[in-house]
Length: 389
Image (tube, rainbow, N blue to C red; front, side, top):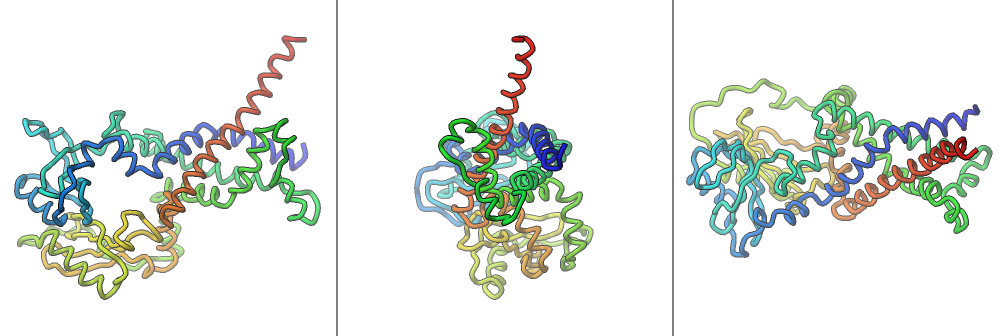
């Protein structure tokens, strides 16, 4: 067996092994590109409210807390819009009564005009509409199999990287000029498409989208093995700044909390000096470290554009800004880590890159199908030949 033939056979059987998992990841990934929009479409009772003038998000949350002092708020978006409910993340509610509280609910949906709770749900995966998108996300990331499933999908992503490299090797010309002789592999004609449609489409699709498909595979590997391998490796090569999160959590000091509204204002004051081009987009309550986390983004977008959000950590008691999570302050390693999710989700450049990731998902599904079906048909023909003889 020649070296090129060995590469071709390796490409075939690595692809056959990974095809089903890549197909699952591709289809679910296509749906997740527009997860928020699909979630709202499937659950209008949670997301849609009458269009009226709205109150600021911190005021809405304060009203909810006054009405339900036993509900601990974990976080919420800071931008309210007429006709769209505000989602508030809370600690799980373990009761069900006449008010319709769902056991284990950890997401509330509030009318931004009057703080009326219009619905609630749990954030766990499920087959019903309120939990379907979370199930699709979990299937995409872990095959609904927890850590073992995440590792398996990480290995599949690694196989995907290998497949991309093997695809280049298999189509690379035997003689110079390399690029000139490689050009025919990137094209096809009507006759070839009519005789061998799937192999032709498989080769052309894989080559024309080789670079973005490789980026998608690389980010998949990095995110699936993030804590076990990728982050420790990157931080060893490019150590980040020491931060308050490196220290063990300390007991909360005595005294009252400043509240979400004061924390937002403290962060806005600090951001006006350090990142004046960004707007507040979300706030969370990090009780373990004693901070309110106020996230900022260009134009207040909810998307993770660029390297993601800049977050200001505000002391929950003093109102002092004690930390700024600004990736550009931590060197190249932090930028590499922060780029993973925006690149993989397609949010890095807004709508155009999301559409590109949607296209990549469709192409990946097509590559899985066009790689397996020709092999299966040849196998079926070989199986029938002895019987016909």
